[in-house]
Image (cartoon, rainbow, N blue to C red; front, side):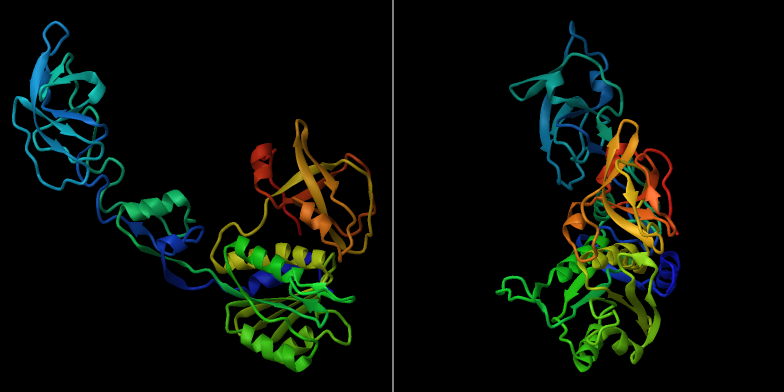
Amino acid sequence: MISAAAAREIVMAHVPVLPASPVPLLDALGLILTEDVVSGLAFPTCDSSAMDGFAVRVPDVAAATDAAPVSLTIAFTVAAGDTADRILPKGVTCRIMTGARIPSGADAVIMLEDVTEASGRITVREAIPAGEFIRPCGEDLLAGATILQRGTRLTPPRLALLAAIGRTEVMVHRRPQVAILSTGDEVIEPGQPLQPGQIYNSNAYAMAAWIQEAGAVPVRMPIVPDSLDATRRLLRKALTYDAVVTSGGVSMGEFDFIGKALASMGTVHFTRVAQQPGKPFTFATVGRKPIFGLPGNPSATMVGLELYVRPALRGMMGHPNRYRPMVLARLDEALTLKSDRMQFLRARVDHQPGGYTARLTGPQGSGLITAMAWANALLVIPTGTGRLLAGTGVTAMILEPELLLEGGLGGDLLTWG
């Protein structure tokens, strides 16, 4: 049996970063660039109007005052999207829309509300500076500029920036496709009548959601019956994808076949981890493809997804930040714990004026779901810890990033292991 920190180190050492692939912009949110993006054009691509108004030659209105206003004829209209190279003669104006190309000769725009319009003419009552309400060509970026660097995570504004320079796809580490396998004759799909001794396949939904939240693509496979041949057959099919996550079948029981099947297919790196929940956890590789054999108890499955599967998938996508943030929280209650393994306790962390506080969300049995459903953090309790008094500081792994925004991070982030 190895420590949780050693298990995580082994997992991350055997997770390949997926090669660069072209991905359409609309599918690239959250992915990591594998190229430096150089703009082939300036933005804006030409001098354009920042307002709805009237384009003028500054000398034509330089003498305008309330006492001696200047009147200009509206010669034409320039709409946004008009690509014609228009010329504004001296002594006249043109109506212009926001984003429209500035006609040659014009060097300022007057807002609609700053003039009086009547009978095809405008009256101007004050001088304006050159460049007023004009967005110059290249104001935002210049042609040839590197606008995004390799290793950048693609956010909505960055995708908009790529679209603004005409890109339709981008080179990134693609999303891994992850096969999901639940095991056991007792497991049935939700919606079917439940008989005594059967359970619904909740773990498949937990696995799919965790995988999707990490940015990868879950692929549901059939439930694996309690048979070594069936386990091998479905694992081989699952290995056509980038990674495999299973639940159940990894303990020491007569009908636990995941470990036996993997031993004949690839390299099993470990089968037991000194943690609670989730001691029976098998990690293997077949070629360069990782297989995560998680325990079948729901809380143990979900803790394994959080501790190992999520960071591994983010690693496959080249994410620099693979782990959840961790903060110091003070217990609202006293706890008496087993001391032979590292504990990952399901808890609710709140931000108070004095910092973060933590309280367990319910009974901590591995087979229970409710405590995990209400948790927004895992409390990381080191091996050898017995009784903890109320007010004791503990490390909290934050599962909901909104909590950090609410608390303003509250100081330095921590690590475990």
